[in-house]
Amino acid sequence: MQFDPVLEEGRLLKRYKRFFADIECVDGSLVTAHCANTGSMKNCMAEGARVWFSRNDDPKRKLKATWELVETPHGRLACINTGRANRLVEEALTAGVITELAGFTKLRREVKYGEENSRADFCLMFDTQAVFVEVKSVTLGFADTDTAAFPDAVTTRGAKHLRELTALALSGQRAVLIYCVNLTGVTAVRAAKEIDPEYASALAEAKAAGVEVLAYGTTITPSAITVTHPLTIEPS
Image (cartoon, rainbow, N blue to C red):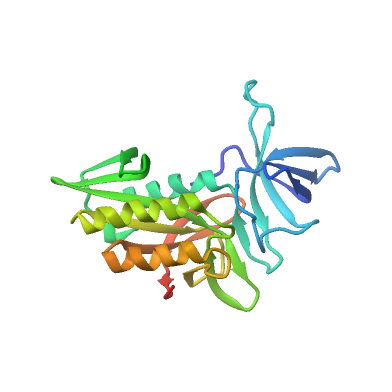
């Protein structure tokens, strides 16, 4: 995925009220950008960090800038715009990069399923078999390891999706969870049990029930992001 228009660089002044970020541009001007990440962004940001943002002149938008990338305190690049993950995974599915799901004949987005009024990010058709796919964006990294973790904050929604996938798997349907790791320098992913033990427990139950858990890493530059390689899933 190429960034279009080209991203602009700046320095993070502060993130506040979850959805706002004040950025100092290279020319010294200031911009308030939308932050699409609803998590804590733990270990992702620090005041003064290099950031990259996009602009959109749509008159309907209150904020014309969107925060896209950050250089983390550990020297990695992270895509903190969680809205990018589904598009990245869709591109990877279409290109056959995610080999475990290669060969589908139809892809649908935001498909209703389950007993808790959920929507699967994707429903893939393999002849007459439907495969339901949930995507999670991972950005939580650590200084002393190349293993990333999810989530970075308690996620009742994430646990709900795991329950829905578990129920599908137990009924004999194919259910898949994909961690799209939007953080460079990572080789593995694990559940962040220290942050959300209930999510970690739900993940273990999902895997035991037959839910397929995949993780794929991305190559990130200020010009583009691409899903490029599989990662290891560490035990919960």
